[in-house]
Length: 171
Image (cartoon, rainbow, N blue to C red; front, top):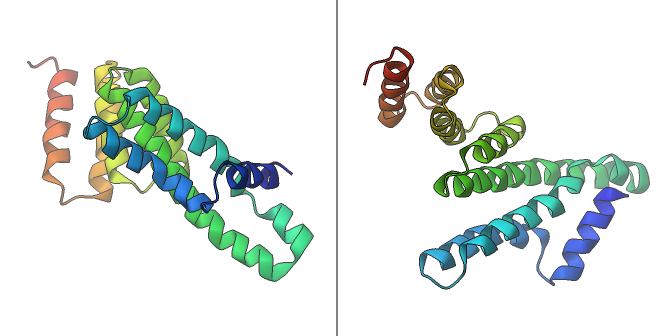
């Protein structure tokens, strides 16, 4: 019932498909960069996207009501929506970090990674926010995860050196 209600709310709010809603935060952030929108609008919009998409992630109701073929389609949609939800949560974390809300950013990045744990950039962003809230062991663990996923990214190696220096009290 929650999945259907979430989808119906999205359909009532706009004639665009739900995937349009997923991309709205990106559009909103681009407008902010051009000075066309207030920053808090993007944050609220991202939160609305998360609220709308979260109930859509369970295809069991579709499978039970509409049968196997519809259930398989719903499973494909789940994969797409999970990725988009993880991206939206990561974007919320990035926004929070940019505004100095690092503990909130840590929470958002962790939620994103619970959905999509193979995102090196989100691991690195989590490491930076953990560093800012002085969770240095957590920051080191997170940047190591980013490096395992994207070993060719030199920036992650430099971030690891900074975190290790802080852990050992080197300025």
